[in-house]
Length: 470
Image (cartoon, rainbow, N blue to C red; front, side, top):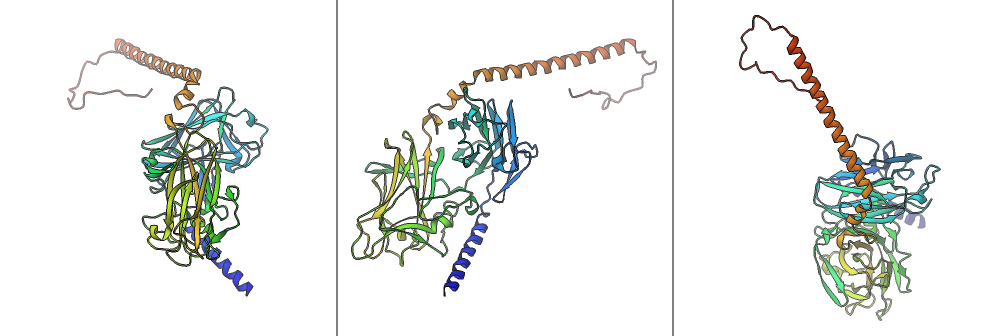
């Protein structure tokens, strides 16, 4: 009996893995720039090809740097890096205007050639300050991936690295610039301000930094098992444990519907696991499940909550309340109603809140006045928290783009001087060559003997031009 059950579980898991592999290749972004920085060879990660930035074969981006070097230990993306001791830029061609996912990979690998303690730098994406006084993580620790969602309405995306005055260099190991699915970030969310819930517009025009992406109740989801190559961590470090909650796992098919949450919004592995509160008798528990996330004060945050009723035995049995920072954000949420009365169909909702002085952002779900005995009284499948840019395009630190660029006036002046010097040299060379040719022509005319018999010249072919490249 146990053997048959084990085989059945293995078969379900195998089918899930195979289906996830198929789903992972269905989304094909129009802009898909994957750069292996500092490497001399391309690298494959999770069936994705990262192209060496030392190669000139890829014309979809350009690297502008007056002073950079590279270190490569192996052909893995985290064992090589591009280093800059002066402001430098990657410029990516954009064909699909709209939201783009920008991921920056950093890893301080062990090398006798580099002292990563000398690294401190700013990073700009177009006009946004995404990193300020950043050091790139810690020596020999796990790689750090910074992810941003940036609205791009031009034909290029510019990524700028600027070492601070007290540091020796900036660096990066790998870069991803990918056009996002059109339904990933919509225009409107709900702004929760105390006991008021109001509409928040132009959400997709904001610059966002992904702070947390959590698979509630389930295991870690790696980029290989996500259709847009995201990582979802477990919720253990954020969840306030309570006795009346339990984990739920679903082995069936997640029923994605047109107009609802797509597989790009949330993968099967997220919607297929959850934590729930369940009534065990005729009384409804008076308790909430709560998750706490450390945040930085002074920013607004986008909170995306993912729901999928994989626990109810029938439709119309699940009602619960949703709280953000202990404020009621969604009363009597009825997953049967919002999904068109389909079980195991995903649904998500976006809230915007101000970061408070406590430095903690909390999310809670719990029973409502409509909750029923002997039923599920609350469920949550996934959480995403994204920091929104402040005024002046700041996502990190206190300096805007203009002030950061002004911190390098000597470099700007030297580059300007070098530019004009190069132009002067080219103009001087052009004048010299032109004058030399004129003198040669003049001398040849003065000493050449004119022919006695001049043939008639056809007017359509008699004018000849001399052209050349300098």
